[in-house]
Image (cartoon, rainbow, N blue to C red; front, side, top):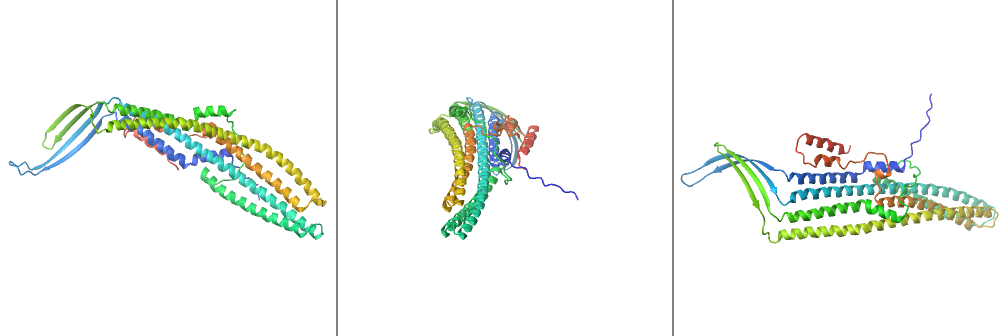
Length: 441
């Protein structure tokens, strides 16, 4: 009989978690659909430059009491077309504003990508820390079990009192309670991981090398000012607001329109009409001026929001940089603490065997060593989360920048298909195929 060796499951890396989060995120799917809706706004703005053609069938019944009576029914078929020839450029400005809105929405999608990937990093690193803490607590329980057994043996020999045994029993019970709490953290962490990544966690591997960020906080802030998605989004929103303001002013001027109508009745009568009209609204109860002032206020609001966002992004970069610096300094200090605590524990253990130290001294030394090791797990996790948080604050936490090696969503494919407002034709069928590729399996 052939014997097949069991192949251990491959450990799940942080990169695997980030890829899964990107592929499985419903938030990304939602915002991609919002981007496609913004793309269609461009198509609608383009369509406003084209003629509007209506087909009308009208049935009429006349019951007249006037003599001679003209009672009866008539059926009329009509074809009507209209086209605005001139409106001060308002419609073309509408296209430009819609394009800026599309660009702003794309930056919003990048922001969602940042959030999805950052939550995945947090979930991965915290779950791995929780699992390491459980292993540490389990080891602590095993050590305390041996120390309790040793204390009982020494009590039987009369070397220590019953109080020393009770201290060991109390410390073991506390360690088991802490182990139960740590195991609960793992269960919570697994649920958080599944929400952030979109799948249940497997066996997590050691985290990779930390990504490169910037050489200084000043360099990081400079990168953020030019790269951060929120700043770019507001820049495009400001451009759209400026264009909308111009369009609002243009709509206050005259417009020139052309219309043509052809109608045919069931009696054989046919009418053809061509109309050229020039119009300008002179009075609307202050509505036109109010609309212009509203557009002006919206422009000023976005401009102020952009100024604040730049300062906010710089503050976020500085905060993330400080958090990472604190974590790195804490790691160095904790490493020294572990070395000292290990030496102290080894010494107290030997001295306890010789009767020079009490059981409480041994338990305290073991607890200090445990706390130092648990503290290191925390600060290492904090360093990773702070580093990826710094990338997010700089605007660099994307699949492309992290080089995850997977195809990303093409934000231009759908836009290029609809930007010229195609009708139901071969272009429409191409749109259907593009939409099918965006449907989740």
